[in-house]
Image 1 (cartoon, rainbow, N blue to C red):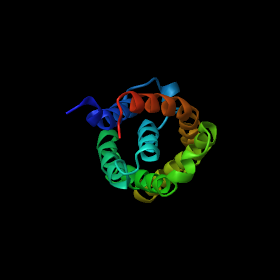
Image 2 (image 1 turned 180 degrees about the horizontal axis):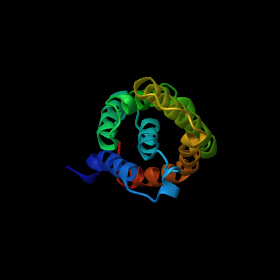
Image 3 (image 1 turned 135 degrees about the vertical axis):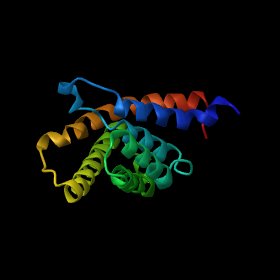
Image 4 (image 1 turned 120 degrees about the vertical axis):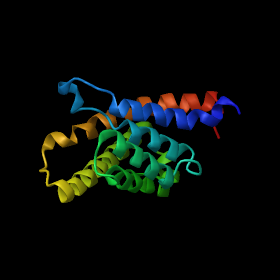
Length: 158
């Protein structure tokens, strides 16, 4: 097996590690959704290899890692990746900044679905601070897009 076979799995593993990495309390509220960024890139680049099923399984892993109710992140990630996969041909033609705006909207949907499910299950209340990761996810999209595209091209991931 060549290294390009494992590139997608390794990038998802790195995203999961970044998602649970301890951070100072002041910065933790702004943590980007690394898994959403990586799955979003691979869905736009290779929709036949990374799709709703991959998002669902990784959402379950994320639920286990962060200790939320099983299925919350799975449903939210599956919904967002479904929207990306259904529109990948159109979104590929957008500029990176336009894609960042779309990723921001999808990140907002992701966080609102997670909030809605957790509100139904655990009776939490909405705080505006809950949406800070939407902004940072949107700001990190161009860099993650460029890095992952460079990796994909250098390792010839198809």
